[in-house]
Image (cartoon, rainbow over all chains, first blue to last red; front, side, top):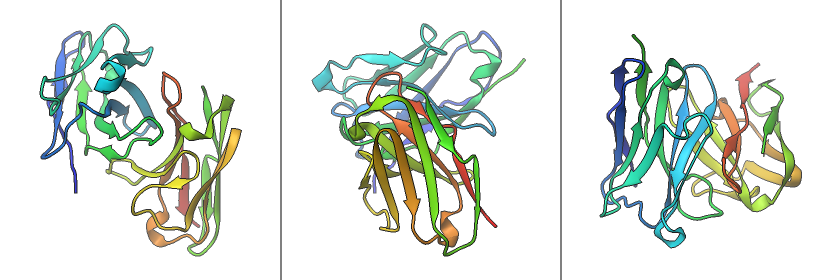
Length: 121
Length: 107
């Protein structure tokens, strides 16, 4: 069974940066849509952004709440994905999930267990 | 696309039928509507994609239907493990959006 694991979460001060990573044995992202979804404590799911697969140019899209501050990327091998988060605010406190969609019509079928990011002074 | 789920909470007994609604603010191709189940402390799990296609390993008591702006997730006979929060999501156009969730709780 495929699994992905996020890492890099933790406590960070407002205004600082943090980079999350996502990887898993045998998992690649190059031919899939890789998205990040977050969930603030006690709240619902919020899509953060995604990076398209190679067939669609590997371009990115972001939620308005993070656009200009967050950046999603993959390494050249397509086996590690990243979420670079800059200018963090208290409102960015959440569990961040890395996830993968097998195709354009398929929904998000592979999820990590999530990593908690706490923004606090 | 704004997704509005109803009801917010559904109180039912095991064995009963659950009907969850997801209304979309503008017409959405059914190819791009998914349902997820989330239990406390766990990641979401894909149940339905393309509005009506069950994901791998999902029991047939879960079914999805709908088109345009109105979509439904039905659980025909609730099992104890089905009590959870359910989210609908559209992935047809950026930004992807989720509904606010429906909690199915034990009555």
